Image 1 (cartoon, rainbow, N blue to C red):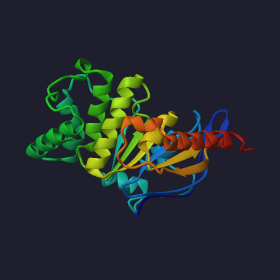
Image 2 (image 1 turned 180 degrees about the horizontal axis):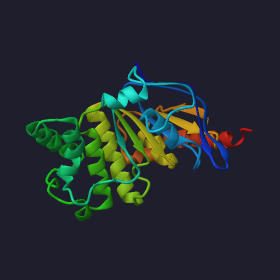
Image 3 (image 1 turned 180 degrees about the vertical axis):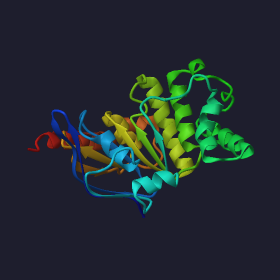
Length: 257
């Protein structure tokens, strides 16, 4: 069942220097339970497309639906959680109270908030850290807290804009593993922006390769890897084959007029 459907989506920003064509004629279906990564060169529209799903940007042409609704309706119905590149935690609030903030805004009762906070802290392996402040945690732990905040109201869709890009490779590997475990436990539909070919191949059921501006989809690659993926799978011939196909897609995108 398709939960995100884009048909002919284009987006042009008007600037003082003239129009900037960020997206052009993007067509894509994302099914329930998919883990879809978006990869491409800087400025190709990966984040812009993710932001259109979240009603943070509005397409100038085409149609986009999220859970059968417009993106704005989906936002109002809390259909998705959004994880930004930086954790965006308030330093004067504890981790638990940062996670609590959207729940407070949505009007959840205190007992419900406390139960949800405990559950998501457990999911992201931060149980026992709810009373800490963001500045007392490592960058990787802060990003896990940000993911917990996005999970707290139990949206079916999780949109993630390059959440691990600023982390070192060792921490990134661990969080990649943790994200796959979380996806397996929750069954959520995930849209994930990355610049890393190994990360895209390791995490995804499908990899969407985008071309340079104006952002277009040059290739959609279906993963043949099993759902359970130890890090060692990155050394297998099938992983290397898929990574090569992604690289070919990136080169192909550069050949567009």
